[in-house]
Amino acid sequence: MDEPRLKLAIQKSGRLTDPSLDLLTRCGLKISRGKDQLMAYGENMPLDVLFVRDDDIPDLVQEDVCDLGLVGLNVLEEKRLELAARGHPARFEQVRKLEFGRCRLSLAVPQGASFEGSSSLRGKRIATTYPFLLERYLRERDLHAEIVTLSGAVEIAPRLGRADLICDLVSTGSTLQANHLREVETVLESHAVLIRTPLALPPLKDEWVERLLMRIDGVQQVRESKYIMLHAPRAALAQIRKLLPGSETPTIIPLEGFPDKVAIHAVCRETVFWETLESLKKAGASAVLVLPVEKMLV
Ligand code: PRP
Ligand code: ZN
Image 1 (spheres, protein in one colour):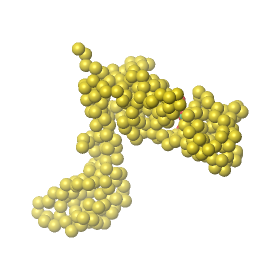
Image 2 (cartoon, helix red, strand yellow):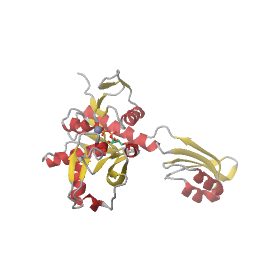
Image 3 (cartoon, helix red, strand yellow):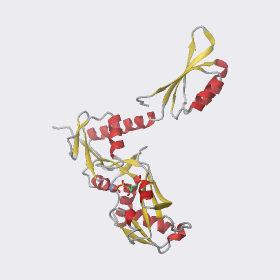
């Protein structure tokens, strides 16, 4: 019998596509994908990647077409609220927060329009493709405004006279700028997440989900991590250990022929700045080497 294969949905083309593929590659997945193909076959893992519209990803997991999905929290939360409004429980679970796809769902007004805090929203028409998140935002502040639900091109709604302001995703801010809009309030901070079906999977699939999660954790941990090696006077050991950013248990090695010196090797899990190296040197460190970490399994 064929081994059961996991199906993972990712965005077909958009801000999450490249970082999603990059993450999967770093997790060791090799896929073969023909041009314009909607599904790519995992050559070295029982995992296939489906390329779909990001808005469809929660539904695909909800409906058990896919076991896993990489999607923005914005899309996920909107879907959760929509399902709740229809009395349906969400059948997807967020299993990892990811470090890419950072953006925010924000309110923006035409440049030149006045805005004095959220009370300025009263009675206004707000265009959005996120009606449920916007509705929650307004309800929590006890504000009444008209939500104009659109399926796209939200940023031109004020110019067309369809709305007074908009509620849309902002990443670099260039779309707002190009449309003479000014960001005024944040409705939701977003980033990519990995979701899975809450249903029990057959053991072989489940095992691969666990392996993938462990590899994702490893990939995320090494992003900022550096391996530091240096020589330190024994007398300055305590001070130098304190200076090493995010390293709990450095390895201390005696140096042959130098009884008052040691070598320290440490994995630093936070960015190592030049300032840190300068402080280390001041504390007596010498022969300092900072190396990138390629893989980590803890
Ligand atoms: C969002 C949003 C804007 C743009 C903002 O669309 O609707 O058009 O991104 O990004 P910027 O601040 O970098 O200019 P998105 O790419 O999510 O497309 P989608 O809503 O069609 O999925
Ligand atoms: Zn979308």
